[in-house]
Image 1 (cartoon, rainbow, N blue to C red):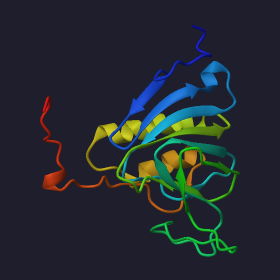
Image 2: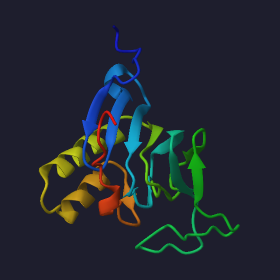
Image 3: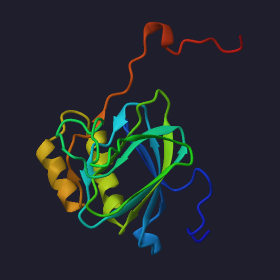
Image 4: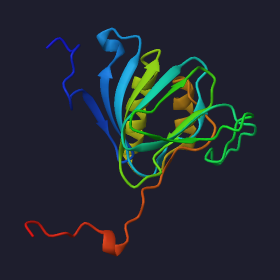
Length: 186
């Protein structure tokens, strides 16, 4: 194969406890747009952020995400979940088939507030900003232990990410009656 046709389930994968990212089109293939398939687990919140030079496009393939793309009347530093635009816009629940285009400079965010994984197609222009960002964030998640916030902020600056509210990953906790102890073959 030439690498220009990517079969389902194929592509370079970066898997962490907080995300699964599959590279579909990259700078190395000659693409000016980086394209990824991303599995967003329950409890993942990318946090509101902006990009000075990058543009992004998100398309929900499966599941449901909460999406935001506007300048709020008032930015708060802890959470974007209650932000409102001057026109009364709020974050939306986006199901399969919904999409979001984000021009440069527009605050945006997504989170999976459901109890099931969501899957999305994510495109970023220009490449390879997010390719490198995903590689470094995967290394940080894989290292375990305490994360150095200053090192993360420096990484974000290198890849055109100005974080407004924190990235969070708080997976839902299962109650004892919800644990996966079901019997096979019953």
